Length: 209
Image (cartoon, rainbow, N blue to C red; front, side, top):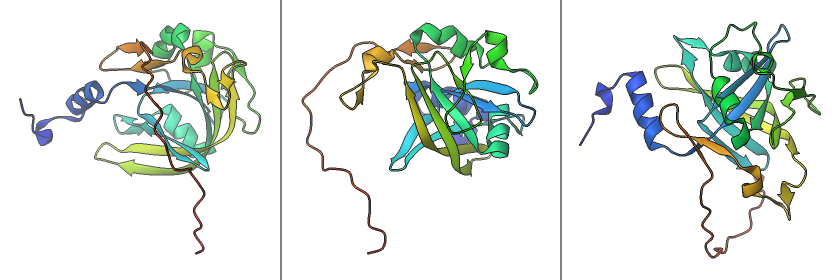
């Protein structure tokens, strides 16, 4: 079977790509509006793009050509928190994608506790295993629908006690969830451990020479 990409509408393309590019981790993002309303929404086009400084990228689309509350708040404030929920929070993650007016806080609707961040004004979710305080680094617009790839620098990592061991996150303890096609999610499943492959040490480039 072959599908010509140019024949697909934006919605049809999204449905196809979101079923192919799987599994996708979920960035559960808190932002704050100019009026002080805490917004919460999940985004599954999410990855890291640099380790020094630590930069994380999230693709944030628009609805009917208008920026989502998350995108609008990041543009206005230049900061946000990427929270990582676990499998016990799956229903709340899903329900936080329900569209509400900007004056409605999803954390209030869902009864989710927040906690102050250490550096930025935007609060983090209190009961997730990981939260990352981010300062906006750059926004790059792609495509015909105005989707924006938002890159932020992680200023502070908040990790649940016992999750970080010997310099690594215990993935089983993290118990993350991922997005697949449609309103479908998956858990970690089996972990297959293979022999470690030697890697050249990562280092900071000397850009002056």
